[in-house]
Image 1 (cartoon, rainbow, N blue to C red):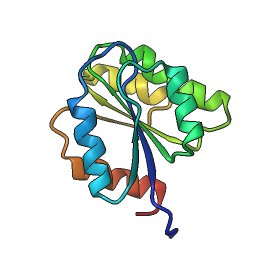
Image 2: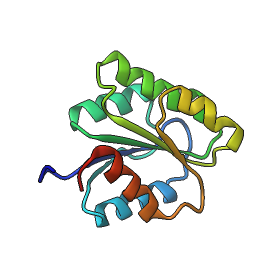
Image 3: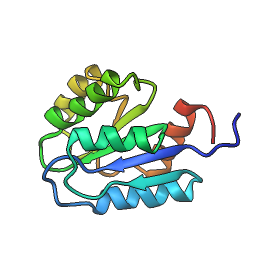
Image 4: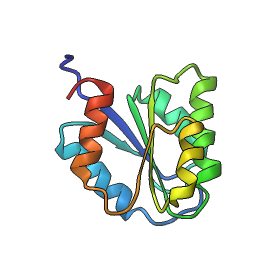
Length: 133
């Protein structure tokens, strides 16, 4: 187990202007001992991929409430693949209908966390998948 903390990029793709949930997740992951970089609002998939590479993150956590998740989340996962960075874990959260989750997972989003998910559950999931705390 490495002593290096897990680095997480929390990102808000698209035109969605609501970031309370993303900020709650960012704070809870910090409280769990992770280093968190928050991109701020209205990021393009390309900007998110660039930030993930520049910041050398282990995880990209995407938040979307606008309904554009079926377009934006896969674009981020594909952008990372094109940069040979498919080892970066991509997670999604927000208002995601259950029927959309299989398509998102098929596109490379490892897990989707919907409203009401305990933040400890998210942190524990990341720690388990990355293999260090």
